[in-house]
Image (cartoon, rainbow, N blue to C red):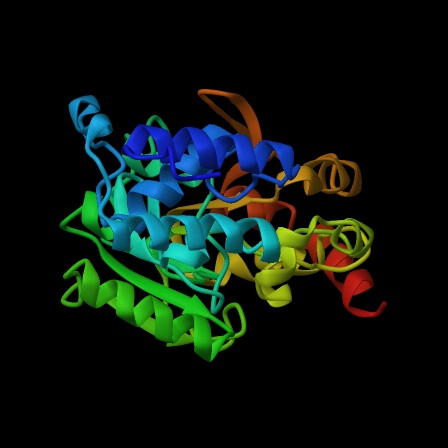
Length: 308
C-alpha cells in the first residue's frame, strides 16, 4: 500500500526499494537504485537535483502523488531509462532535454569539461572545437558553456538527434557560438579544421549489444553498436581526424570497453588513456602529429574493418 507515503523522502525511499526489488539496470547517469529514485522523484516534481535536505519532508499533493507513482510503475514496467521518462538529464552540471532521439547523456567526458581539459589543453589555444557523434549535443554545448570564447560545431549522422541538439542549444542559450552539422563523421566537414575534436562514438560490439539489459533497447542502436570488435567508427575517426585538426590540434575519444581491442589492434599508437576520479574510463587523447606519424597502420586497420 502507498497510502502511508507522504513526503518527498518517503517517495524516494519507496522508489529505490521498488527499483532494487525489480532488479533494474542502472547505467544511464546513475549506478544505483537510490540515485535513480532521487532523479525520478525530484524531476517528476519539477524540482532540482540539489534540493536542500530541509525540503525532503515536504508533503506531496494528490496530483503529485499520482504522477510520481505512475513514473515509478512505468520505470519498472517498461525498463525505460528515467531520463527519458522525465525528459531531462544532467551533464557537466547542466540540464539537458532528453528523449529517445539520442542516447542518455552519461559520458565521463563531462569531468574533463568541468576541469577545463586540464592538463591536456594548458599549452594549447582553442578557438574552434568539434563534438563528433554529438547525439543530444550535451558534450559540445557543455564545452561552449564552460568556454565562452570557443566556437563549437556539433556533428551527427542522425537528423532526429540533431533536432534534439538544436532544442538543447536553444535551451542553453548558446546559439551564437554553437552550430549543428548533419554529417557522417567528417563527410560534411571537408574544409573545417579544429583545435580540439571530442567524440563519444558508438563502440559496443555486436555481441555486447545483443546481451544488453532492456533499458538500452530504448536508445537508438545507431549510437551504441559498432561492429564485431566495437571499433568500426573509432578507426574511421582516427584515420580521418588529422585532416580536420590544426597543427597543434588534439583528439579526445571515448571508447569504453573497446579500449582493450583498440590497444591490441594498434599497440604502437601512442594513445594517452586518461584517468578520472573513479579511475580509467576508456577515454584516450592523441595529437595530430602522432596520428600522422602512424597514419599508415591506422588506414590499414580501418580498411580491414570497412571490408568486413
